[in-house]
Image (tube, rainbow, N blue to C red; front, side, top):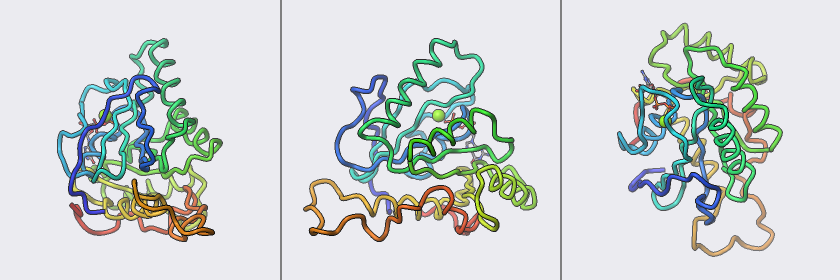
Length: 236
Ligand SMILES: Nc1nc2c(ncn2[C@@H]2O[C@H](COP(=O)(O)OP(=O)(O)O)[C@@H](O)[C@H]2O)c(=O)[nH]1
Ligand SMILES: [Mg+2]
């Protein structure tokens, strides 16, 4: 997708605030500081669109951004930040669960893992939750610019095992700083969005069913065929 427009839509603190129209959603999830907002900005080509922070744990709301008036990108609150009071954490959890289980739930959830760190129990919990709910999801390693080529390969292998990918398959790996891996991630997003009707277009012909471009098995397990860091700089 060639991004020609992007804008902030809404900062949702209650389920009633979630957009209810038929546009597809791509959600960015992961621990505080993993790079969700930076990746969103990189994907949409505007620094500072979603606020990034060196002080983690700030985002309480689900922030919706609209790209090309066609696709929502959703910056979700991060988890795993110790200094959040339990009550607030419960509220976030309820809000995120309401989103993931609700009618506008994401067409694709990108679960981000920092390439420099081992995944945590909370990462595992989220992955299992997404799997159990049948939310289409993809693991994305972030900040690969911080690793050497060899370290990146080791991390990819370790993470593939952590996810349970078949041998030879690797997760996606990106850098919001350099743009590495962004074209490969866009290919996945485009594939997901291609299966969703654009707003206000006529319905597909009878008997059409799911588009062949959106294989139902395109869950995490299918991801590894894409090479780890697939060339190219920013596509924007
Ligand atoms: N080197 C590097 N730093 C990054 C990258 N992505 C994010 N960061 C930094 O990591 C910190 C947290 O990023 P942010 O996007 O706010 O994370 P969020 O809490 O998950 O939204 C910020 O200081 C970013 O500049 C990346 O790809 N490479
Ligand atoms: Mg953020």
